[in-house]
Every structure is written in structure tokens, then in C-alpha cells.
Length: 235
Image 1 (tube, rainbow, N blue to C red):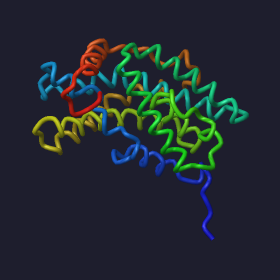
Image 2: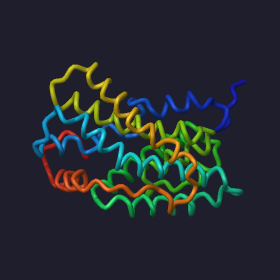
Image 3: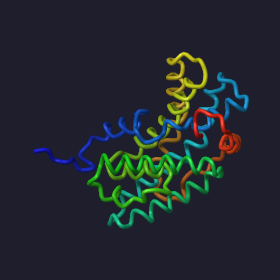
């Protein structure tokens, strides 16, 4: 007789590998993490490693902090009915640190896709079942999944960094002629750059403590890209 596994019956490494897989059917393939806009604005492909390093210090810190706090609030909820309001509070904190409307829109669109996936993979999970279907950004949903499945805060922060870097690397391969192995090296180097932030982000459990690290140039590129009709990626 087949039994449906509980949300915490899967090992944390397996959950992390699933969520880090670029083939995850959550719609993330429509996003280049603003790389397409940066290249179209004149940034040379050789600057992609520097672009990744900038993201690790700014956007990625915000998103990793958001995910970790969402995880903490899901884990601390005494009743699943507390989860929706808690996640909306985290999402509001993320939005306050994401000035670009275009980035907020794509973040919430990706969050909706990830929510649908999460409910299909873990249909028995109380926190994921009551989570709003739309309106939550991708890092908030990632944090909720981590909280519901037992994925640790350190692993989650590293997952966010890897996901951010590999999204940029994968987009580069589609937009510019490049040796694939070189893009893989960029991902590893970017994750190494992020590592010093992990121990500071992992203990966060208050939306007010989420890092506020702006990236005005990336935000400007994202806004310009939103009005472009000829593009490969939505963002």
C-alpha cells in the first residue's frame, strides 16, 4: 500500500537539491536576475562575475534574509492559521527592501509558481496548505517550504545564494557565447563570496532584521527591461 510521505519525511539534503534544481517546474526559467537588461545596457559579458559579486552583497543578502525569517516564523507558529499573516509580514519587509516595481512583480509571480509546486509535492503540509496562493515573493515561499520540510537556516541561505548565481549563469549561456565550464566556476566563486554572510543571516527571525542592501543600478535596469518588447527573459 502506497503512503503519502509527511512534509518532514524527506531528508533536508534531498529537499535542498530539489529546490536548487534549475529544472524545477516553478517558472524560474523566465528570469535572468536582470542579467539580460544589464547586457543590453552595455555591460560586457566579462563583467558577469563582478555582477554576481554585487548581487551577493546586495540583492542576495536581502532574499536570503527574507527566506530565513519566513522559515523561522513558520517553524515557530503554534497553529497553521498563524502562518498567512506571518508570511505577509515578511513579504512586506521584502517589498520595502525591493524598490523596483518590476522586481517585486517578477518575485511574486515566481512565488506563485513555487507555491503551486509546493502544494503538489507536499499536499499534506498544514503551513503550505494555508499559505496564500498569490502575493508572496519567491524567497518568502522558499522560506515557508524550508520551515515545513525541516530544511535548516544555513542550508536555506546557501540555497538562495546558489539559486541566484546559477540563474545568472544559465541566462548568460543563453544570451552570449560562453564556455559552460566557465559559468560553473562563476557560480562557485559567487557562492564563496556569499559565505561570510551566512552565519549572520542564519539566526534571523524578525522581519525588521532582514538586511537592507540596495542595488540601484540593477533596479534601474530591471525597470527599463520591463518596458522592452524584444527580450528573451521577463526579468
